[in-house]
Length: 116
Image (cartoon, rainbow, N blue to C red; front, side):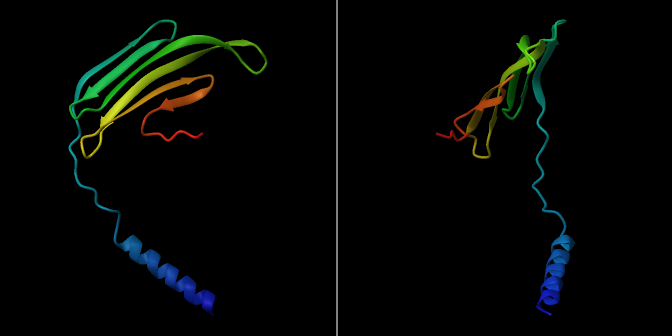
């Protein structure tokens, strides 16, 4: 009997939550892009960057590198290095630098905790 009562209460709570609809977020204008560049080299490397009017910036470049796979056979991969930054609601700028290579994605930032 208790189980049926709990199930009815949970169903009622879910119904109330669904009836209220999704949360309404404040409408924010879409920032305009003030600069953008993309160029690709024939061998597979590239340079990519952009900046928006509200201070969001990203820069990235890819470079082709030969590495050995699990079977010790050479293969070409694209090593990506880049950074992005953005202001938060209080105007504080946040920066992230990263590398993505055969060792995975490796971000660095004062905002990312480091495990000891």
